Image (cartoon, rainbow, N blue to C red):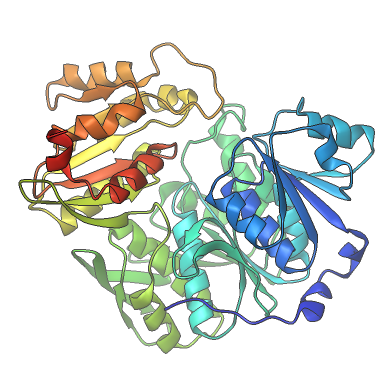
Length: 486
């Protein structure tokens, strides 16, 4: 199914009447997934959108094609005409555009504050959790679109059926990924909130205190109105622990026998997951989900829980699940390629936390058990590598061949012993596999020429620029034979 929409601009602008005073909105770091999505929705609402980033990318090119002005590089003059400036936590306070906006007394708001304004006059559905947010947001969007409800959505990754990570719909429904990494999801005031799971990540935001992280999720759920609804994964032990502390209506989902929306009889057949969803007081649903993995069955059941409570037809739910094209960089099957001695399968995945990497490996093993699993993994952030070092080693040694890149810093300074080379040594020392460490990502294609064989499943894994390498390999058709004969 391709997601389409219609819109009446005057009607949509009327949903946020007080923002009529705002003429021009400037985004610092407009090329990021979260920032670009909000910018595109506001652009389609008729606002003048400008933005800046350090480099051009397909996202900025798309925004320019839709009428935005995007500056490459940051300078004070970029914000001269802005009514408001939107920033993400990735932007340094010494950024010249922030300084200029302060001097001009131009309002500066965080990304989530602007998202909250979009949600204020709409029926908001917010998807939070350490893992699975992007896919769950896409699946909720898919169901509501299939039902003809034309939602607005803002996602942290590409919704492949829509060809974008954000779109302005004509209805009052807004579906959004809620980001806990900087606790900014506390700005949101949704009607429905999903919590997929809670694990230790982005702990610098929470002072290294897991109890603070848990309390922040409770606070997020209590942003719901008293008639709102919390949809929570009862399989996750931390989420289960928090349920008694949530003073809102709670709908649970999962494989657990006490889940309100329960998954049974899950099997994976290649790219598809098949299972039954048991719903109290309603007919069971026999689901064919066009994305693999038990974790995605959980993501789907969260979306089904929301749709069921909103009285969306079973037909729309079933069609959406079978027709979903998934999200960009989430077990993204890029194709099969001739290697000179057979065909290799290339998959790209964004997962960068040990739990995410583990479920991706399990999905690959379940759907393609006969294939040798070759993983190209790029750690993301030195702090995460340090904090979860042993977990990474435990997970990564499960693959057949591991090619380990150095850490994608995301602006962090190096931390001794928390780099790709150290992680490679640790895994090698365990004696299960012998990782190949590649210090320069640009040399990766030539390394792969000597590693990949016909019949392999090649998995590029991580949140950094390893995804760029996957696209390069896709465009090269992964012709290993030619590469070896150069």
